[in-house]
Amino acid sequence: MSTEGPEEVEVPRSNQRVTVAGAGAVTSGGDGPRGILSFNGSCLEVGLGGDLRLCRRRLFDRRGHVHSRSFTARRLEVYQLEVDVKEAVVTSAIDDLIQQKGLSGVIDYQPLRQSASPRRLSQLIRLQYFLETGGDWTGNVALIHLAKNHKQHKRIQQLPIQLDEGDVEQVGLRETFESRGQCLGQWSLIGRRCGLGCGPEGIHLSGLVASEDNSPASAGAQRIAALMAQPSRVWDSCCCDFTDWSGRAKRLVILCGDKAGDPFSADIEMCLHPGGRARIALHSTEEPRGDGVGVAGSPQTVALARTKMGSDAWLIRGVSEATSTGVSKGGVGANEGSSSHSRSPRQPRVKPHLQQTLVVVVMMMLLLVAIMALARRTIMDTSVR
Image: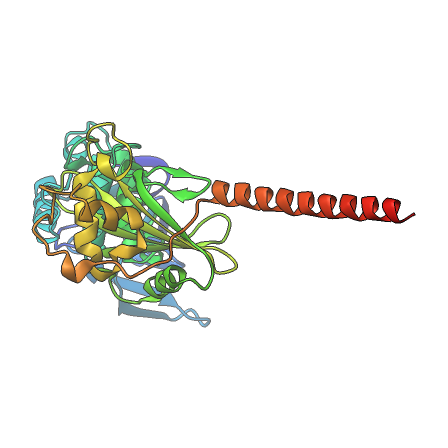
């Protein structure tokens, strides 16, 4: 390929021939004029064939003496470059990597493979590099399935995700990719396809099924704090820890939806508020049943949450009560025994608006008693006079 200005060229990692065909600078040597290729202040002879990674770099010391040593070339800025790379070799390597990384049926690249862009080959080489050095994809594969099952803000209509030139381009340079770490590096390749719904309250993956607020120092708040501090998996499920815009710590426990074949996604969100108050909520994208409201509208989700939470099911009163009254019959985990999952005893709770009404009534009664006492005393004083 030829350009009028410098061009960045990615050198493939696999064993392929790379030939320098020309350069913008020419100098005279003992055997006549020859082209040179500038590389970080050193010189590389033009027309050198074979594996570019095995060439020699010429370094000049302060006295003008030349020293040569081997170097590994990954990126060159040149004016004219002819790269003899077989596209079939690159695509075959990509196909093998997709298979090895467990990405079959999750990621594909047909739009890039069929692109008519003159940059197609270089982008294929970049994709090969990102897959080869991206590490273990298990975590992000789960997020891809979760994004597909997220119906409220659905971005992935079907799998596999078909990567195109824009997806590879957004990753940026290799240095940027490598500096992000494996997980974020992978996400930079697929992130724009998996955009999940976010709002001022944080991440919202699904619709609310049931929730519970716990006052500071209560048994519920203490248990939620312990679960959020637990370093390992919670209820044998994947966890996502984050801090929302207001600085509140949150933990998202993925119950289902992160695996191939899951019919819907469900999660439990735990949140610690300043002052010790704690909240726990169950969300789901299950197809609503009946009126679709609350636990009665999501029986499979409730049954799954009951099974996963085990002895912690009491934390969400709607889950434990719905299970005990048979709402989850026929759902996931309906055969689980209820004796080992009974919720811990809790004091009856009065709804906030009823609490306020009772306070007002009591205050009015006390005021009335005070008025009556004052009136009686006034009457007695008058009669004495």
